[in-house]
Length: 328
Image 1: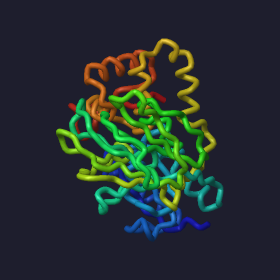
Image 2: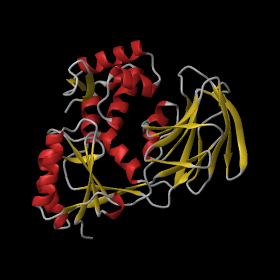
Image 3: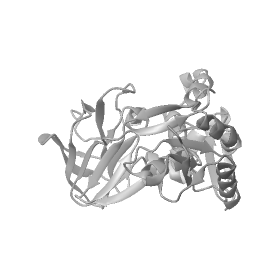
Image 4: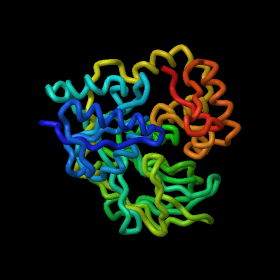
């Protein structure tokens, strides 16, 4: 299919100069940059994995193919090229030399009105950590359980190796037509992860806690929830463009971690997985995302730095802000 009309999603840490460079490259290859993702043949998401997940949220239920472009010379889990390779990648796209990887997308409706989308998981948590919440879980109208826990999440097969795995969920092979429901630190040990058909309509209702609760999509978009959230698989999958034959970040990390994993602390493994899936983050952002104590996060990062698995970088906008990302 022709990919002539391009919508450019600019990430949080992309400079104005880099954004203009992308626009120039797009124009130089005879492509038209459009302002509405709904009218585009291709979405260029510039930034890290967090930015690409934000782009997926922004395009909503559209199945427009997304090409992730990382800054610098490194690639991430969702991006197959770097900014330096964008020109040659667009040439390959024009020649039809690319593949489309399709992934299930979750659709969540919060309190009957606000709609969120996710590639990995949709979770419900109290807005303040270390606080229990009560909820009821219904699948296709049937009450499965009532629970008190730190939270609950619904994950796709791809998302089963992200937050769901750290919360005790199972690894689900990509391509399996299922969704996974994972209670997070339930007070009832009988509440175990639940695998349901991906045609299921999952309702998390009667959500209550001492503090307001939030629906969190892919660790990014947050929406206050008062009563319930209904989660189902979207009819349209997410389509990620792949134009590079280089080893993926997961394959590269697998080799690097093999010699280290035997004696790596669990907290370090968890933080490494979050950096792989979410992209560069500050220590505070990691603590907020993982709900780990900041002291534990600092220890995990020191271990990962010592082993050469992550690196530290300074924000170009604020030299006082330090980010951590995967070492390449």
